[in-house]
Amino acid sequence: MGKQYNKIEKRRRRAAYLQRKATKAKEMAAKPKARRVKKAEAAS
Image 1 (tube, rainbow, N blue to C red):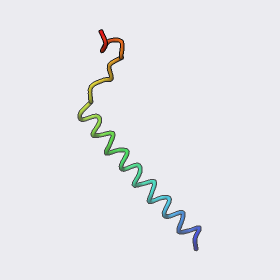
Image 2 (image 1 turned 135 degrees about the vertical axis):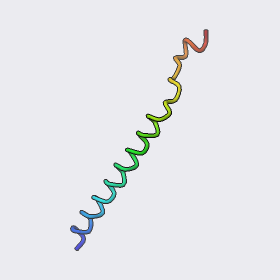
Image 3 (image 1 turned 90 degrees about the vertical axis):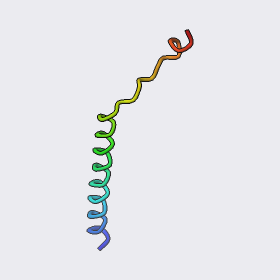
């Protein structure tokens, strides 16, 4: 019984992970944050 159930669990976990990843990618595309400034430029 365990093997079949684990297969289903894994599939559901992966689907949820992919969905989270997609929504995060959409958010980042919608509002790109400021690029990181190099320390040398910031100091001068």
